Image (cartoon, rainbow, N blue to C red):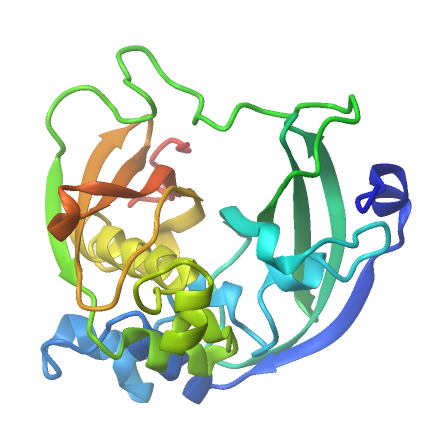
Amino acid sequence: MPIDAAEALAAGPRSGEISWSPRDVLLYHLGIGAGLPATDPGELRYTLETRLHVLPSFATVAGGGPPGVIGGLSMPGVDVDLARVLHGGQSLTVHRPLPVAGTATATSRIAAVYDKGTAAVLVMRTEVSDGDGPLWTGDAEIFVRGEGGWGGDRGPSARTAATAGERGGEPAGEPDRTVERTVREDQSLLYRLSGDYNPLRADPEFAERAGFDRPILHGLCTYGMTLKAVVDTLLGGDVTRVRSWATRFAGVVYPGETLRVRMWRRDGGVRVTVSAVEREDAPVLTGTVACDAPERETAPPVC
């Protein structure tokens, strides 16, 4: 069997040094759509080095290497066809605010392997620390079609754990806020400069061979765009309030489309759904949750 769950879980972690500069942060922010309007004070905190705040989702590209999904496919016990691989979900826990420049050690391992019957799910966990201690922990869920059925642990349900009154991961009632964000035609071309050079995101011929009409946007770009919308809309523009950010990738986004981001304040955090406006609100991100820190030191812990 191409996936040997026991071998993958028993394999030792891989560690390496990563580093980043303000230029990398600025490029990432531009890649997820920051800077419009260019002179807006709220945008300048993402685009001007003298005011720079680091959006936590930058952690997914820090160091400029391939995304965790690709790294997971090179781990012991994993030998699969890339064409059958999907990025199923991404979660991030921030232990303290990300610095605008840094050098850190990233340690990655396969933390879980789940048997979904018709597919397998690998969880690639990356823990990053610098000289002052832990910075962040990221989990990339790697969905491999046709690799299940060996009788292993099925793992958690694909649906977000629903609270009372929720329907399929979407909270009941009207959203507290709804915003729309336009994906520029060149969004993929700019975002890929942060390290993910998958030709599916830029080459029309490659995209056609993969079954798409045209190149599609990186899922992690949508992930970052959505977190920025949440921070700017409900967290007062304060990136340090984000403690965790998790989502499941439910559908593709094409450059030039409009994202509709619906947000609900629930359980001390923010629940979010994202859809593509031009395709009759086709789901893009589901089960999306941001946990945030309290605005006051004396406020109770949340999420």
